[in-house]
Image 1 (cartoon, rainbow, N blue to C red):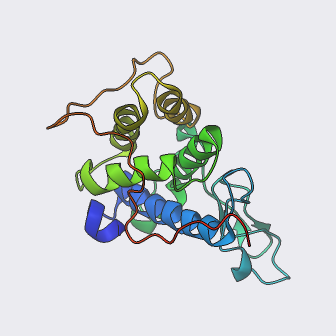
Image 2 (image 1 turned 180 degrees about the vertical axis):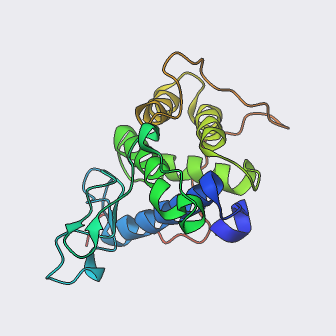
Length: 208
């Protein structure tokens, strides 16, 4: 989905967005499988991959990037949680696996702030942006602006959902707190909030 929908270049910030989007989809899939709300989830990626001798919880933490592991052999989780700690490196295609922690945390903050299931409102917003609103060279600011704008289009301009998404990007240092609410022009009328943007998604079972 990340490769063929967004077509993001795999380098620098666009590459880190590529990695983050895949983490977001993977986390929503995990939570869906476990019937977890955003509040119930551990937000850890790749936990079962670490052996018992490794000092760590997972490969990555979307809730707290940089805290997934601290091991004498592997070293310390290098992911930043804020733009002030962005890693500008020639390695790893410009740090795509490292800097993805910043947009990952923005999704975590959005999902837990909105509440409920991550694949509902937050997932709808992220999917709309990935599917229709990005250029191949999009950077963090472009993605942040687009998610805030789409949150307003789908769930009300100036409403609670849009404010939560905007605050999430402020928290990770992408959107300046004093910046006005973002609004993007669209080619048609504002669309109502969709019942289900994710195609072929199994229904949620709330009782067993």
